Image 1 (cartoon, helix red, strand yellow):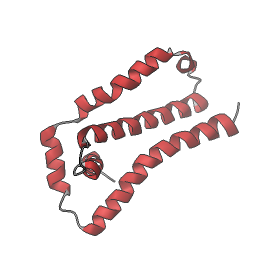
Image 2: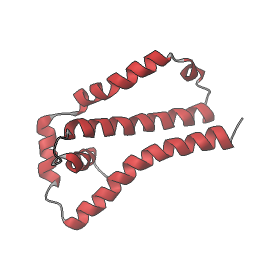
Image 3: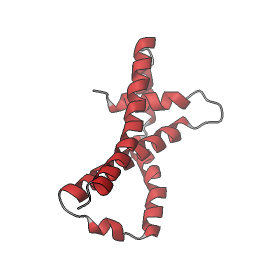
Length: 131
């Protein structure tokens, strides 16, 4: 089981040394997007399996747009802590090359898998299993 700090460290380390890049913002945006898709997947499953969430389809598009703009900023304020992130870097930066590669594969699988799972669940639950 991966620790959340390790996921933060890996995503942060991918852009930490790139010129003209903002690794803190990139990490927070990536994690906010991952969590958005995870929540959306849960909502799809609840909507199709437990009870219909009709209010979701009636939400004002301006509200959704404003939420999409402010959510990553709020997420960064909640998650980012310079001292804690520096501890993650110190704790995990001495991993072996083999563990680094395995960790990269795990974190990429987590990020991509969270997004793919949403689209698969929408296709399966709304397309193939129509009520």
